[in-house]
Length: 120
Image 1 (cartoon, rainbow, N blue to C red):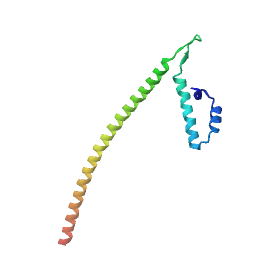
Image 2: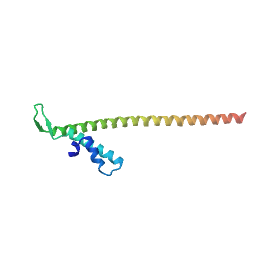
Image 3: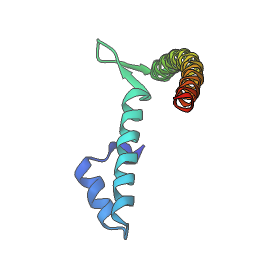
Image 4: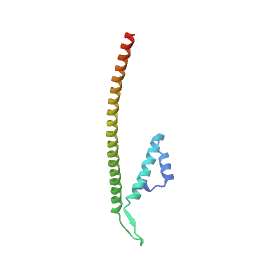
């Protein structure tokens, strides 16, 4: 919770005191930013309109609702992708059949052309 409340400059100053690789410093700054977001979304106290505070179980509920919503979107996207994949597989099968028919026809034409050349 303390890291989540640190201002950006202090967090950077704190990280500069540690011997870190540049990539690790970026990852830690990203982690601190995520902690800030969680602290904002799921804070312990919620200020009411009249200036009083109450326990915020609502933050966790909103976070869970958001995650459920994202999950539903991902399931819908997965369903659409699977439907699209089935359509592409059917198209692929049709094209494969068309190719086999054209190859057979081509072979037949070549065979007939070869017979005509031999007869001439």
